Image (cartoon, rainbow, N blue to C red; front, side):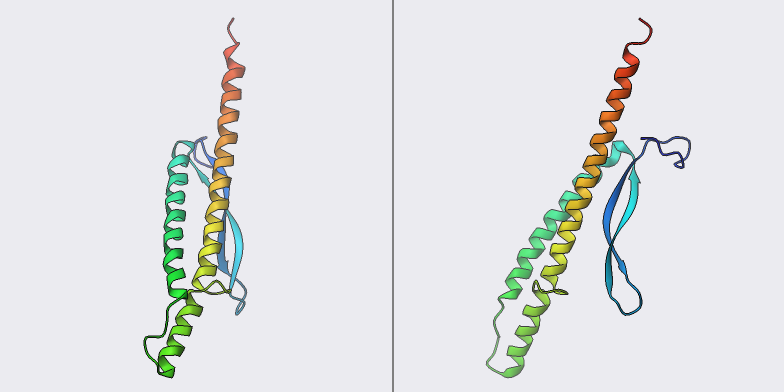
Length: 138
């Protein structure tokens, strides 16, 4: 696919990434999608980087899971309340780290799949175009 606005017909594949932005005042964060383009020669590097980021999220999620089972360091009320606050902050309820991590993981997966689909489509079109020109001149 050629990007007409990309400066002289530079080869670009377009894809949609899941993103998060601020919603209307006081409404918090809103899931959205943003269109991007990348040089087909660099698309696999982008995919590899996103896969690496996704894998790191998995490791961080294991760390958060450990925090969800943290016990109180003392028998006083304040230690118990602090432990509960840590568990909630690391948890999977909306707003917790585990929840945010899951949302980010899904967004990365969707973006990786969108890039791969665009790259596959680009390669198929490129091959079809090459095949169409093979028969000329005979």
